[in-house]
Each structure stands twice: as C-alpha cells, then as structure tokens.
Image 1 (cartoon, helix red, strand yellow):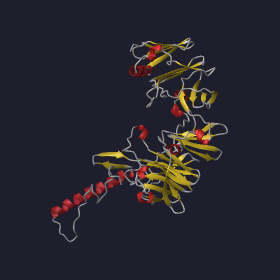
Image 2 (tube, one colour):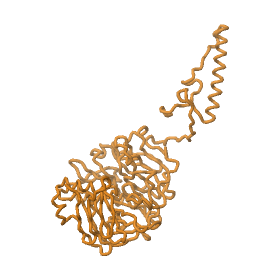
Image 3 (cartoon, helix red, strand yellow):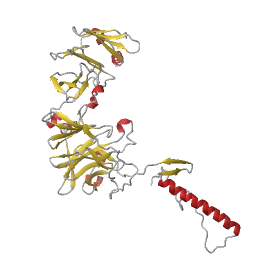
Length: 467
C-alpha cells in the first residue's frame, strides 16, 4: 500500500472509529438512545462507503471525492531485488517500423552509431545497438526495418542478447534533465518478435537495495552486470541472482568500468588509479583473476564503430536543409541523399571536416538551390587543441567533391584574436541565410546587419562585422 496515496476508509480502520460496548455492561436509557443514534449513523456511513467504493471512488482527507481507476495487482518476483513488468506504459512497444520524420529531419531520426554496443544476428537481419539507439537492419538490402521509439525508452547504454530477447540498460529520464543522483538504472527485457518490453529488473529506488551500473553482457542463460556492491549474475530462467563481492573480486567494484563477453569468456575492464587491465571469470573454478592491459589494448574494447564489426552502414554527421524534395546527409563514408518515404541513397565519396557542431541551432549546413554546392559553416568543436580555430567554414563542390576552406587564407579572419573568433562563431549561429545567385549572405536575425558574404564561384569571404 502506497503511503502517499489516500486509501478507502473502512469500518474498524483508522478513519472511522467504531464504538464498542461490552455485553455485560448496563447502558442507561439516555446512553442507549445515544448508542442507537450512533449505530444508525455508523450503518449509514458504511452503506455510503460501500456504494462509493463499488462505483470506483474514494475519500481524500474526508473532504473531497476523486475518481480512481482500479489497476490490476502486480505481485513481486520471488527474488526481492527483481520486479516483473512493473509500472510499464500501457503501450510498451519500443521497437517500431522505421519512418523518418521527413518534414523535420534531424540526426536523431537517423540510424546514427558513434559508439556501438552490440551487433546481433536476428533471423535474416541484424539487431544493432549503440548509445540511445536500437535498430533492426537488413544487411543485404542495406535498409532499416525497425528503430527505437525514444518516446517510450529515452536512453540506451548497453545491451546483451539471449535467444530472441534483448536486454537493455536504461536510465529513464536522464536525458530529460533528471540528475544522476536521482537516477536508477534498470534492465529491460525486450521481446524482439513483438518489439515489446516484457520484464523489468531493478530501477526502483523505493524497493531495490542494489544500485546497478550501466554495462551488461550475456552468456548462456545468464545476464552479467556490475553494481556498487560487486559483479552479479542473473539466471534469466528463474530470476535468481549470484553476487561476487569485493573479497571475491580482489578489488573495488567501482574499478570495473565495463563487463564483456569475448569468445565465451566473461571479463570486466578495470580502470583505477593503480590498475588498467581486465578481471576475468574462470568458469571451472568460479573465480576471478586480474591481468594488466596496455592503453592501446584497453581502448580496443571501447568506442567501437560499425566498421569494427565489418559493416559499412554509415554514421551520419550532418543533415542539410531540404532542397527539391530531398535532404543531403553527410556521413563518415561520403554524402547521401534522402527523399520522402525512401531510404538514404549513396551520392558521392566526399571527405569533409567533422569538427563542425552538428546542432542545427548552432551551425549552417546548406545546399544551394541548384544542388551544386554545399556550405558548412559555424562553431567548431575544438576540445583541448589550442591550434583549433573556433570557426569552421567550407564550400563543397557536389559535382567534383572539391573542398574549399573559407577562412584558411582569409587575411581579415586570421588576424582576429581567439576571443573575437569565438564571438564570430556565436554570431554565425544567430544568422539567417539568403542565397542570391552566386552569393550567400548571412544576416544577423536581430539587427538585420550582414555578418558574412560568400562568393560561391571565387570562394571568397567578406566579414562585415567590426571586432
């Protein structure tokens, strides 16, 4: 019973005090009348409550009456730390047919995998998972079949597969502003045949004592995961759990950053101040042993791309404006076009800079009306590189694939201080674009002053701002 929800009041429960008179006690006449009166009031009250409860109503604070729907009771799993299919949305289908939001296409609407977490055979297709992405992909036709509905599950951190069930680690609400402190990771079991979540493990801070981490793997019928108290293994056939604590692991559980299965061997990646390596589970002895790794070998297990799995499925970086009924998509292996109700089609092998901020609100990815040129201009993601320019700007000839750097040899831009270059980058993000023949003008959306003028033929740039 949830203490935060007012419950229906019943006779002999707190909320209604039932008067009790001992049988052997003599009741004076006046007290008897009072007793009969109270008894009639009590009976009437009980009848009223029964009628109200039967109609789906309950008292709140004995002042207001509010409707409540009668939900089916969900019993807890025999294992205390696991809940079965609790508090799922009415429509728990999270893997849905692929349909791009063509009129408002963004990177998130595409199958974009920067950090791949798993590639699993499924019937004649592949299930591919990455950070916040799950897709069913047909490798022979190079088409998407189903994708993750992120309105139903807004985050994906790692996955594992057993049979035709995909297990997903998610932190509900984290991508919508929920803090790490208030977030509890859950493991969801997804039936790949129906695309629906059919079970949930953990994720409820009011019931779970174990705070699980973000990485899982599988072997046989077991899901392996890490938590704040060690490594644990779930038997998915009976939901029983086995824990390997600090004494069995011989190091702090917080040192284990990921848990993996390679060639049938389960191991955890270890990254602590004094250790960089892996902790391997020996199935015969049911014990763990640590071995060091070089930085290169350690890195080989993380930040994997699709090419590491032998797939040439593109990773998209930028989406252009819509022109003549299609978009141009800039990917790691070239440029694609996307028409409505179609799949992306390879256009040309063009190598272009990846430093541009991909957010459409910050950068400009523009295809000219004749589809001959592409303009990529805006703030650049520099990181710790002190030689990185705060602004990136290139013109791509879509016919020849030739790239022209707009700022590399611009005498006005090159003498600006880093601060003023950063100011220019911010100003570009606030501009509106107008194409006039062979000229593109970026104008400040507020004061309507020209910021940059670009000649598409000569690739010359005129900075019209004063710094």
